[in-house]
Amino acid sequence: MEVSGMSGEKIRQLIQAASEQLRYAYAPYSNFKVGAALLAEDGTVYTGCNVENAAYSPSNCAERTAFFKAVSEGRRTFQAICVVGGQDGELTSYTPPCGVCRQVMMEFCDPERFQIILATGTEDHKVYKLKELLPMGFGPENL
Ligand code: THU
Image (cartoon, rainbow, N blue to C red; front, side):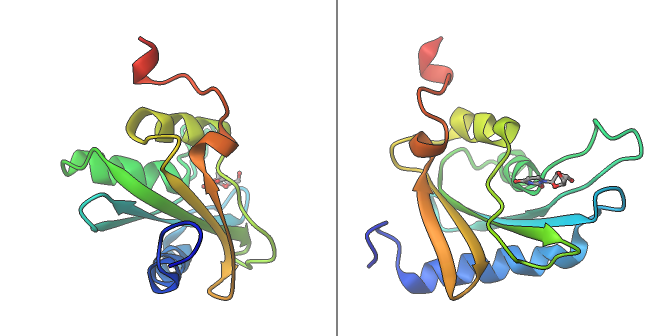
């Protein structure tokens, strides 16, 4: 077990699953390809890629693709998400989730527990809690 509470093997699996999504990324406008792998509480992994649009604003990030796939199949609770990305799919640095994706995470995840794994490959990753990336986030509990 690592400090994060997830085994190194599980983390490598998520990095691998996120990286495999890069080939499906539809990013003809930015050429910035992103892949994500979302681990549901029951152990199921939902993957996603970014899907851009000629009108730009309808574009969807890889993280939200993964979340919406999972929620649309009945999952509501999650352990972790891994995100990888880069220009032309080259993983030269970490790809932190955008603010909109952090807010979507806040809807379904416990900010003290949900883990966000940023990676440039199976040998290099960093793990954050949602609370660190979205301090004092507004969520269902606030209503
Ligand atoms: N993008 C993601 O899919 N996830 C992120 O965490 C950051 C940004 C996408 C959106 C857009 O298609 C491209 O990367 C450039 O912003």
